[in-house]
Amino acid sequence: MTESPSAPPPLCLSALTLSLPSVAGSVNILRGVDLTVSAGETVAIIGPSGSGKSSLISVAAGLETPTSGTVRLFGQDLGALDEDGRARLRRGRVGLVFQSFHLLPNMTARENVAAPLELAGRDDAMGEAEAWLGRVGLGSRLTHYPHQLSGGEQQRVALARALTVQPELLFADEPTGNLDGANGAMVADLMFDLLAQAGAALVLVTHDEALARRADRIVRMADGLIVPTAPEAAA
Image (cartoon, rainbow, N blue to C red; front, side, top):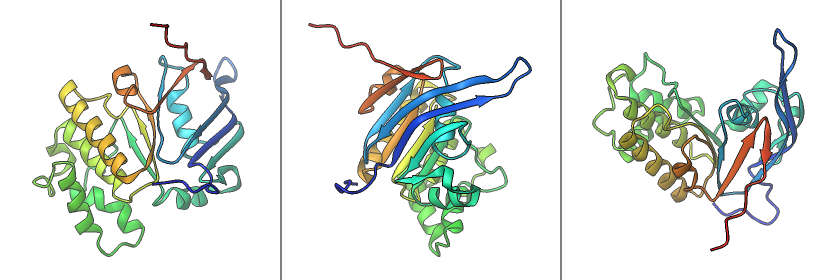
């Protein structure tokens, strides 16, 4: 997906802060984050636990409101939208994949993948869901419920659900974190291959540095801040 010269980037974060209350007082989770992701760019966010990586994804996707600063998705200031407006903006343009799958337990794999298409009013939701499950290697598991699927299969269903709406931007928070090495590699391969075919951008949170190196750019976080990456040592 090629960005025209006048098109705004899929994601632009400016001076982003997030503070949450605690018994001991306010805790600063994000402390002034600036980040821009271009169309089709893949960005991996790494850093120690508690550095603010998952909170950054949550705020960037409009799932959580920042304390201050600006989040722009496709040029639209999320602070100017209510919850319904943010949901409408995400619908069809933003995909979300999480470590814990978030599949609806009372729906089959096909129904889980079809759900966002049905919300968008698509008449071909079930057919598209079947096609996407085929693309992630689950064409024979259409009528299985989440509890009947392995962890790797559940994450592939979640990936198909996120991509079936053909988003321009995918947020993935530790998408391989609950998987063994083989299943994690399979999900990662599928995610990068399918995003490359679509030309969609990716913001990926991961503890896996090998997975992070597959991205176009690595962003390191520590203590709620993006920290400079040390230059490569001269050969």
